[in-house]
Length: 165
Image 1 (cartoon, rainbow, N blue to C red):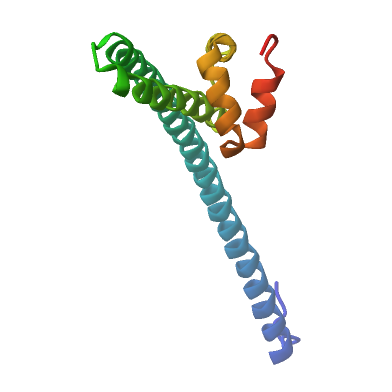
Image 2 (cartoon, rainbow, N blue to C red):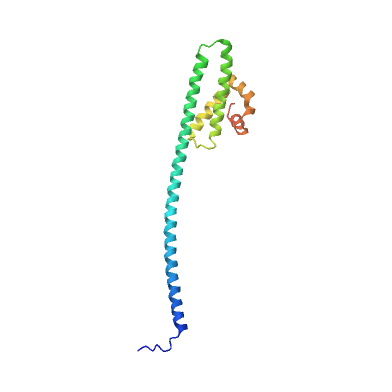
């Protein structure tokens, strides 16, 4: 049936080489499958990390917005204390000047925070309207003229861009 006489050592080596190459292809294919599975898992992990980062960013933004609200409330309390606190007339003007500067600095900080915090449009409109009305008042406008050089060029341009200021 089979004639094995023509089988030589070189033929056996060639057959062994072919078997080694086929085994190499098999292991390469298995390695590529394992790599593909690893990439799939890494992609899923990356998507999860991106979602977590998005949640963390939203949480940080909410905390910053909450701090802005709390600081605004504290400024209102301070306003009532300074202007309606029954202080002596000498100290009252100093307190008013200090308070006026703090309020301007608060709005400047809110403006600068907009660069890193996406505020709702309604909040931005509210902050702009409050700042506009504030700057129409003589004490605040006089203080602004004295301290505007201490603020960023962008904030100065923003205040100047508010209609009626």
